[in-house]
Amino acid sequence: AIAQIRYRLTDKMNTSARVAFSSRDLDNKDANISGLDVGINLEYRPTKFSFMRIEGGYLSINGKNDTFTKVFLCNDKPSNSSLHLAISVGVYFDIYSSLNDL
Image (cartoon, rainbow, N blue to C red; front, top):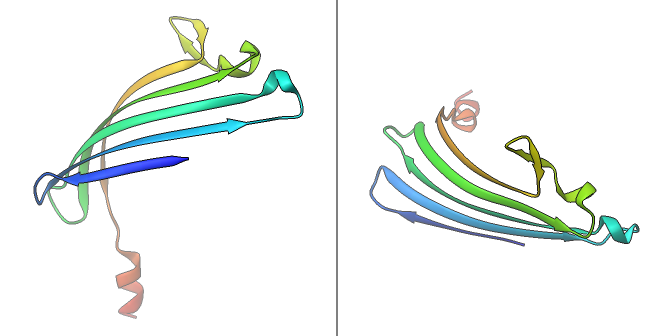
């Protein structure tokens, strides 16, 4: 299940948040896992085709057996959760408009 919300702060700035949850029942009962992903970001669009974004998030995987859930390294130790912070920039290409002009 995924839920996401976006809010436009100004014409050039917006923010969004998302929550995702997943659960898998596998044939091997020790391998049954569930995961939670939570994220929030702030995005600035200086032009129609470009953006700058800062995003933070939390990811957690839970289950009965650590072999299947401890997939992250934190201080060189296996962990079942992870925090992240990312800064990205990008450019959009409007391919569909270009195709219509042919």
